[in-house]
Length: 240
Image 1 (cartoon, one colour):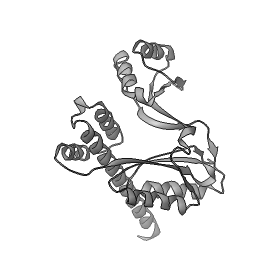
Image 2 (cartoon, helix red, strand yellow):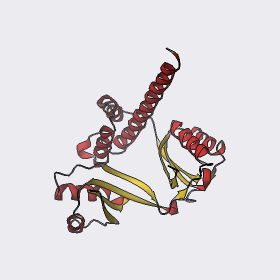
Image 3 (cartoon, helix red, strand yellow):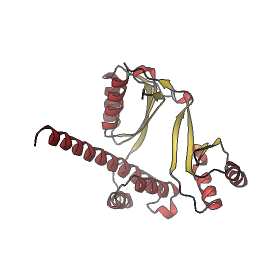
Image 4 (spheres, helix red, strand yellow):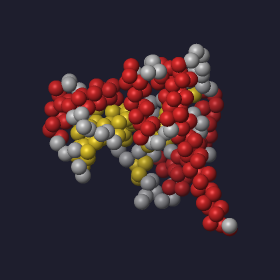
């Protein structure tokens, strides 16, 4: 079977590993959101949105149902949010969001990623000030005025609306996410949201040199392999 089979086998294993990581990530997030609210998406908008996002990334129904069943029970894990900030290869800014039931394990794993790639773990707030924490809703459309009018009528604080190639993207403060989404879907019931998330967007980008690119990619891969890492935000622009 030779090298081609081995390459294909490695690719299959890598894909399986990525899926396992994705399912674990959503299972943990769904459990926490359901546990902190109610395990019923009808009465928990945050949970409903997360389920929609999980389904859009092909997370199987049994993974979702298992997380909700677990959250409905008594006891269970006690997860806490942890956020780490710092500077990665090439001087880019990095924010790493985690969910953990063991802070010592999580900080050790994350610090290891920084140390082994010549990166620098910073104090809380060291880079977050250079990002905007925003709700982002993106969908097909081209009428910015109608969207802005709908947000105005619903008293939603809009940061910006962009239109590009038949795609409208609405930016609002993170705290306005559910209000903006509800107003949008009420005003335009046929809208299918292609992006619906709360994220960190960099205020300025940092070009990564070809020399720093391999180390940057290693850094991101190491973080993605950490059990407790949920999301990674950065301002790096990698050479095409």
